[in-house]
Length: 118
Length: 118
DNA sequence: CCAATTGTTCAATAAGTTTTGAACTAAGGA
DNA sequence: TCCTTAGTTCAAAACTTATTGAACAATTGG
Image (tube, rainbow over the protein chains, first blue to last red):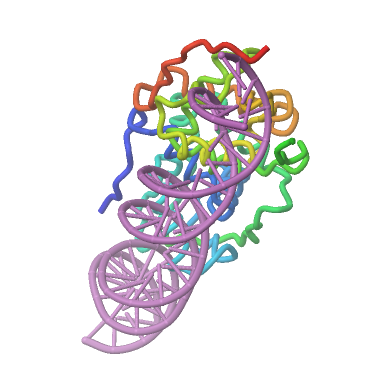
């Protein structure tokens, strides 16, 4: 059970920019960046919308190549594809995250720690 | 006769990203960046679409704060708001332009020189 | 003044995006 | 096995964006 992701060289600039041009998704990326190295499941983002709606936005991010989703039991562990994005579009992710860093117009993620299934 | 532009501090990250997430507009920005300092009118971009459609896309870019349009006679001279964007979102425009730089999936602008009204 | 040039606006349509709830699948634990 | 948890899928509705052609405005040049 793996989910489809584009290869690094298939990541498209206009698609990435379009996907990031949505406040909910930008908030997801900002939060992922702030927790880099930590495994996050979808429920971490419930502050941003309904379960169904998050599934939609997280699929958009994954299909654009911005995030990676790994299946761990019933969880999908979400990470930023930082190395891939840096390789493909040097500096882009950093400048987006820096710009989003303190934007009060973006929704915020509460961020509860979660226990993973052993 | 001046056209409305947002102030630098009113430029919104998600709006800028959304506006750049369109191949036609990304091509416009790439071409403007390649001709920085040169005055360009809308007709320069007719390779990318109809006059009406360009008017629409150029208005989107202007309203997002990505470009500036100055009225000179019957022309609108278009420039990139590079300094404003660099001030607001450091590094963002550079990385977008670099990433777009050699993307064969983006439409290209022919680029004829034009004679301005004296 | 008249005609040409440059670009905008309008209304219509076409196409795509976001959001929702209900139904569903898959894994894990009691 | 049965229940719970995590997340997806589907179809519908609501909304937004892109594209077109016809009509319009404003300036310039003859």
